[in-house]
Image 1 (cartoon, rainbow, N blue to C red):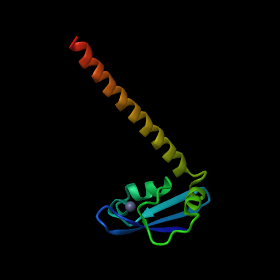
Image 2: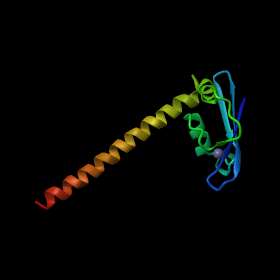
Image 3: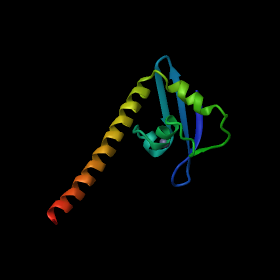
Image 4: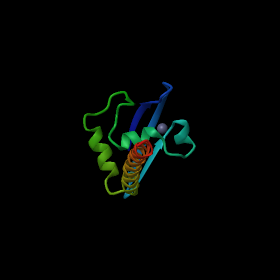
Length: 109
Ligand SMILES: [Zn+2]
């Protein structure tokens, strides 16, 4: 089990807990979003290897510990799908912007 203290955007302190049993990774957070059962940015950041919100003493290999907990789990698979969807969305947003610029150009020729 891995327990990491994080500081929320309002300065409150929360506890993110990661526990793995077999291929199941349970990730809990004591923040309001985490407590109500929805995903929270704290866990997503920590699982992505971003420890900027973390407080207290972290061991030097905390990134590797998280990666090891994540490897081969359903959480890892879904996070990868989320990341791909995010990339697709950003690409589509760039395309929309580019088409709008092109539209402005062709309408003002
Ligand atoms: Zn949280």
